[in-house]
Image (cartoon, rainbow, N blue to C red):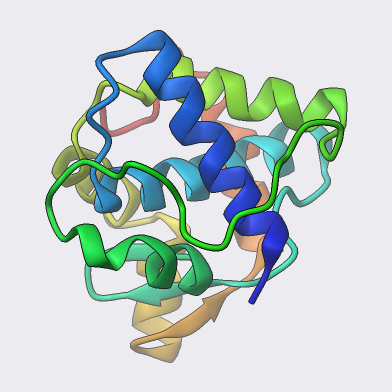
Length: 158
């Protein structure tokens, strides 16, 4: 289990609580973690997460984050199980990527985020079509995709 991915999820959850209404569902949080990873790769060429993103039926998923929040089902996540305190753990670039994603997308529901992250042409769809269910989505694919869409004002599907 990746404690960094769980720390990323907890940080984004706390940022959403500060900036929005705080009712973040598991699907929403899982997608926000993925998008933050994409922002980090697209803006800085470095991964935010230290574990792979997988192509699941409803879009990209970081398994440890899913496992940590699945008990909430469709209810708001109160806390990410197993996370460690993140203070001092992240670089300024990582904080910028996570803050941007939480601030821009933190009030968008999980269904819309899921739809946006698995439209045709996304890293999820390209991986799903080539390699099938639960395949690892390469960071190169994510980086190239987010490098292109970061020039747009919002995620291409929102």
